[in-house]
Each structure stands twice: as C-alpha cells, then as structure tokens.
Image (cartoon, rainbow, N blue to C red; front, side, top):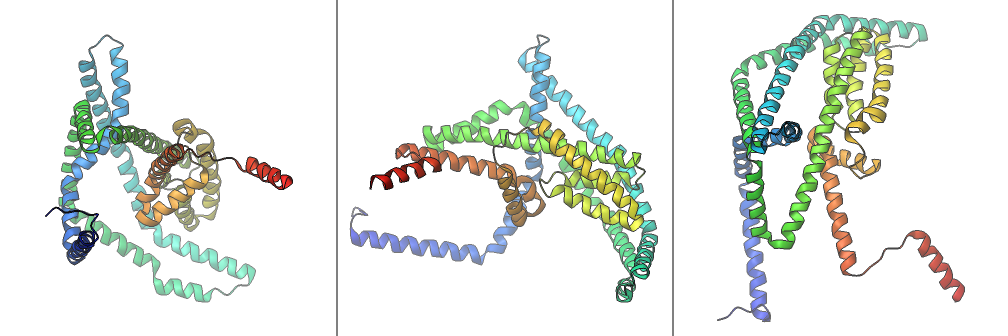
Length: 393
C-alpha cells in the first residue's frame, strides 16, 4: 500500500503517530536529563583542550598571517614563510605568557598577603571613621557598630582566605591537569594553524554536501562574517583591556596608591566586559581604598574616570574602530541579556553574538522584501502621501 499524505485518513494516522513519537522522545529526554547533562559534561571536558586550542588558533591566526606576509617580502616560499611565522608567533606567545606570570604573580601575591595581614587594621580604621562622622553629625550608629562586632568581619575574612589557600594547595592535581591541557591546547592550535587550508576545505566540502549550493554559499559568507566579527571584537577587547590594566597599574604606582598590581589586574579583567565592566572593576576597588584611606578612594575615582574617558574616546576606537554596525542601545541590550543568561561570559560574548544574529535577520528580511517586491518608505514620505490622499478626498 502506497503511503499518501493527501489522503485524510493516512494524513491523520501520520500526524498522530509523529505526535506519539515526539511525546515519547520528550519523555525519555526529561526522564534521563541528568544522565544526558552528565554525558554532555563529560564530552565537553574531554574536548576542552581542543576547544581551547581552537580558541588559541583563532587568536593567533591574525599575527601568523601578518608575520607570514612580512617574511614573504624576503622572497621566501609561502610554505617556508608560514612555518617560520607559526614558530615565531608561538615562541613570542609562550614568552609573553611566562613573562606576564613572572612579573605579575609575585607582585599580586605580595599585594594579597599584605592586604590580608592588614585587613583587621582597615576594619578598625573604618569603625573609627564612622564613629567620628557620627559624633560630628550627631548620628546614632551603635546598632551598626554592634552588627560589625557580631559579624566579626576580620576573623571571618581571614578564615575564608585560609580556607581558600588550603583548597588551593589541595588542587595540585588540578593544576597539573590544567598545565597538561594548556600544552595540548597550544599543540592543537599550532597544528590547526599549520593545517588551516585543509581543515577549511574539509569544512566547505561537508557544508556544500549537506546543504547544497545556495545554502552552502550563504553559510560560507556568514562564517566569514562571524570570523571577522569575533576576531575583531575578542582580540581588540583583550588588547584594550591589557593596555588599560597596565595603565592602571603604573598609574597607581605613580599616585602612590596601595596594591597597584592587584588593582591593575581587577580593572584590566573587568574592562573586558562592555558598558558595565568599568563599574564592576572600580566599585570594589573604591570600597577597598575607603577601608585603607578615604582620600585614596577619591584619587582613584578621579583617576579611573580619566582612564575610562581616554579608553572610550581614544584607545578603544583606535583598536576596535566602529565596525560592529550596531548602536549603543543594542550593545547595552546584548550585554544585559547575555549577562542575565550566561553571567560574565554572556556579558563578554553577548555583543558579537547579537551582531551576527542582527546581521542574519537583516539579510533575511532584505531577501524576503526583494522576493515579495516590497519597498519600505520612510516616515516622512508616508505622511506626505497620506496628506495628499486626504486633500484629494
């Protein structure tokens, strides 16, 4: 018997059967959801070195291409130029990481150690400041001071730090595992960059084989747009944040603010996040400096305001340019939604993901309008046309 969906009975049987199958799949999915999550987590953990390797290859591909073009000016063959470029960029990247850790980690540990040792004194100083202000403005803060004493902030903080240090010491196996993954990721990145043309060719063959010519062309163009957006945004933001972190570090040294390495690290890391990043970094630092000396907090607040103005008007436009193609409203929207769904990672990657979705929807809308022969007039022409119609009536 030939199955024909045009027959009402067979169509009804098909719809009911598919509904039952979908319901059974959904039930099995929900029933074994924990096993499925555990399986996905295991697969992601297994593939982590290669995912990190892909990220490193993505970041280092631009410097490799730039170095390769410079080497080809010396009449070297493309193959030799590419091999030398990969070796040079990889060596410089490893040296940069080692130098950063060699300079930053000892200073950061010293800052954290001094801060922990002096924390009880900072809390006492804060209580003295509050007491002085209360006496000066005739405010009763006895309840606040008693709550400070009941919380025992100093002992609680030191116990928390000691517990964290104990856990960090017990994480030696995880540190070895992380170092192993880092080496595997770097090796995978080198192989991916070296074999980039073959990997891209394989990807194109699979795409065209599965989706056909027209959809394959669209996917290829869209993939190139995604590469350009992510490469420009991620590399540019990391470079900008590194520069801001260094400026903050040296600025704190010049202004004789305490814990310069720690403050530079906090500001540099949080500056990666658009819109909210500067505030996320500045607020805890200002609170920290208030505990030490309120004047330090005022100096830092003015200093960070100058830095952020310089970053927003000079450094970031110089590095990133204005090529994302979306307004400030959509940047704020994408950062807020990304942060609400995926936390700090969502806040960082929300902008480029939204740009790609925005561009895809825009292209689909334009294609649909052309196919339906529709033209969207501007608001002024609509108003004029309506006036003409009313006058004619």
